[in-house]
Length: 161
Length: 161
DNA sequence: CCCTACTAGTTTGTGTACAATTGTATTGTA
DNA sequence: TACAATACAATTGTACACAAACTAGTAGGG
Image (cartoon, rainbow over all chains, first blue to last red; front, side, top):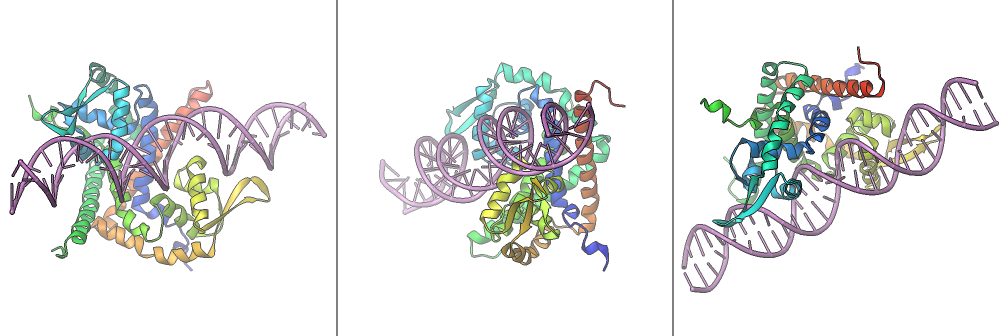
């Protein structure tokens, strides 16, 4: 008889909160990144490259938790924009090394205000958000580990632990 | 000279934590939902329909924070699977009402264990996750409000507040 | 009643995401 | 050296996600 049973379960799910907040984040970035000509995933890739040195596609994928199927077309677009250069590593032709062009490097300056504007839109000092960030990363790790454990168990007949 | 300046900024960003955790969530759901023949967004739509009554596309979009451009093809797939029925509302032909088929209703039973399995994979009792969920929803609202305020300001020459 | 504005949904085009497959290069091992 | 196993990236096919343009239906003011 209590109304609790009839109450929406959707809004009570953490996963949906992550899902819908991600969309809101994307929409918040969109007008800021539009000026730079970037999408949010493209911006993330540029963030990694701005941090330093040249990187392989695999290394970028490990940082962003994305595979080459997603990154290859994304990186081709960045290359077409003249922001990066893609070239097979002469030392290991399997790898593709990514380097910033001058245009790509100079875009870093234009992107400086972005994090601050997003933080402002979130409406709370970064300290308060640290706990959320930390917990999200713990969840991410837990979910990915559970997945990896299951895959390992499926491949070998040896049960995990 | 401090190493802090050289430290990766990507991992310090809450937005990236949301972004990458969302992907992990998606991957965690995938093997569970595969048995039901659903994707995660399709599952969310079914959750709303399972909650009760028939719903219009617009109402569903408000619940899921998705627009009709995303929902129309998704709902067509659910209809093709025989899970839902889509029909124009005779009272207002602009609206499309969504109703569950018997097959769609019976799928609810098969989906019962899913939330529990996901919660288990997250590796912490739901109480600990409530704070995160709450804060994410606050962030989502703040970002969407900021966006709405900007749109309103752009449309009228009257400055907001 | 007519005409305009508005609303709901569909379509189109671009850009992620990812599983699965393919192609090429490297490594390990007999 | 041969040659199987592995590793890295690209390709293919499916499914979101959203802006913008489009279609059709409704409501409101004259």
